[in-house]
Amino acid sequence: YHMKVSDEDVALLLACPSSHNISDLSDLTFSPRSLPHEEMACYTLLMFEDLGLHVLFNIKRETLARFILFVKKGYRDTPYHNWRHAFCTVHFAFLLIKNLDLVKHEYITPLECLAFMVSCACHDLDHRGTTNSFQTQSGTVLANLYSSDGSVMERHHFAQAVCMLNTQGCNILDGIPREQYTKCLDLIRDLILATDLATHFTVFKEQQKLLVEFQKHKEDQRRLLLCLFMTACDLSDQTKDWSVARQTANLIYKEFFTQGDMEKTMGSSPSESMDRDRAYIPTLQIQFLDNIVIPLYGLISQLFPEAECLVEACKLNREGWTVADTLFSAQWDRGGYELLSDP
Ligand SMILES: Cc1nc2ccc(C(=O)NCC(C)C)cc2n2c(-c3cc(OC(C)(C)C)ccc3Cl)nnc12
Ligand SMILES: [Mg+2]
Ligand SMILES: [Zn+2]
Image (cartoon, rainbow, N blue to C red; front, side, top):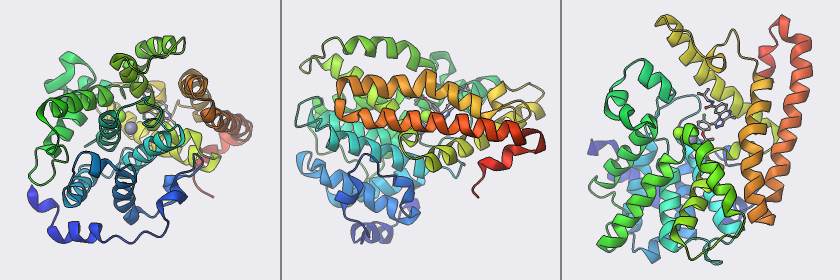
């Protein structure tokens, strides 16, 4: 298992020349999907260092580099839930921390900042491109392990994160005093579990109460805010321009339809979103934006006015889908699906 990341890989990453400097990446509109695949590990290292986390928690640069490379290898080559998605998620956390000045204004503590960045990197580790209900319905090993507690995939992602941290030479938390280490791991667990869509709705009601008057000194309120930020990071492609939002939908439905095909072969009938013969993507995306994405960034922008541009970007993408809808329905019977693929 250890041979997955060689000392040469680590040395290469430590010497990584980056074509942009980190300030180019710090704007809320910057799209991390525009960066070359082979530079993502390097930018992950640079983001952690830019936040000064290695100094605060005396993390050796070599340990951080090895951890990042292990996390990168911990993702499978699925259309959407891959290392690039994890990188985009970490990048958006970086954007929130920098642009909302979260640590400076004491919305989160430095330890919470570290847990937030690590949770984003690890939040979809070893994803197979299938949903929680697919695990349970097809009785996978992961379902046997976790289905009694729900959030099957998210519990697996957390278990994988713990496994990474316990790998020799990768434990970026081993420089932290015992009681802070436990608190950090507990927070990583909550933050990764927060990315289960099924629990999002219940928690979101709680988070809306935060709006009334947010008390920074209350740890449970900061934890709710961090869970809100986790879903915002997970969905951050929706805050970029139309070409990114459309391409992401393309990748997600590639995964969904593959799962639907598998479910058909297994004799069970897939839900509409998973069924390539029934799903109409523009309508599904407009519903997703209206029901989940826009309310989420809307709540964040009520707490942080500087995040208003994120809501505007999501609304523009919603417009994109209404235009696609008119185009699609005009061409739909003639296989308008190709419209989704890149020109
Ligand atoms: C563009 C976009 N469309 C989506 C459309 C539908 C769904 C979906 O899961 N529908 C239910 C199933 C049973 C059919 C998710 C979508 N999605 C996500 C996403 C969000 C997640 O959960 C949080 C982060 C908590 C919201 C968790 C996983 C994913 Cl893939 N990310 N981007 C998207
Ligand atoms: Mg996930
Ligand atoms: Zn994700």
